[in-house]
Image (cartoon, rainbow, N blue to C red; front, side):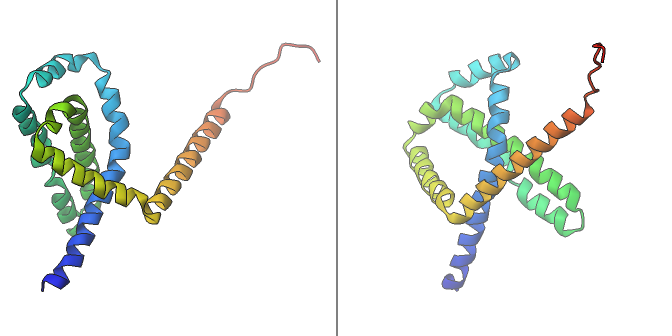
Length: 172
């Protein structure tokens, strides 16, 4: 039984890491943008004033609250509410990753001073680096870059077509 269950667990873990890595591509710029907002300065100072274990507890809150979004979205998709399931998955994942990204950036030194956290983070990085080194991941990254370029060119073309023609006042 253990031999049969082990590959399934590896596949599920791989899917989990890939989904998080894909959403992290979107979440990082959003988190950086939020970091520049002055409205969050008081919250930032409060977070920085916390002890390292209080910071760890705060770091766990978005994971505990927003991690159940994935199974809830899967349930909605399985019960013919695909659009709602997809919307909940996308919004929940981006929100979770934005919060985790900002908290990690703010509190990385405190969190890394906790030996268990530092060990778990090192293991996470090993798995993430391995996934990102695979040919499949590289292909997906290439496709994303091609899609970004295509969208950017389409938007530029559309903007150019929306500009009114320049009126020339020179005599012909």
